[in-house]
Image (cartoon, rainbow, N blue to C red):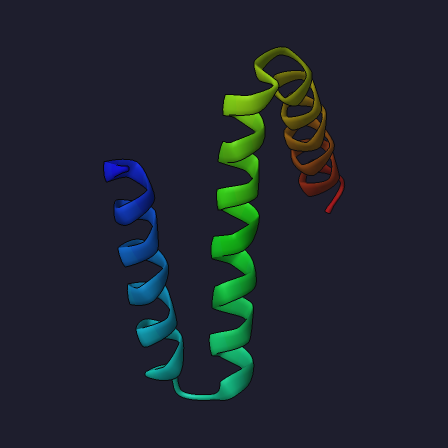
Length: 69
C-alpha cells in the first residue's frame, strides 16, 4: 500500500513538473522518459534475469554506437 501511494505521488509530481516545462513537447518527452525508466524498473522487479540481459544488450549497443561517432 505504501509503495503504491509513493508511486502515485511520484507520478503526480512528474505531471506537475511536465506542465511547468518551457514547451509542451519538452513536458511530453519528460513524461515519456519517466515512463520508460519506470517500465525498466518494473521489468527488473518482474523478470530480473531476462530484463538484466536485455538492458545489458541495450546499453552495450548504445555504447558501441557512441564509439562510432
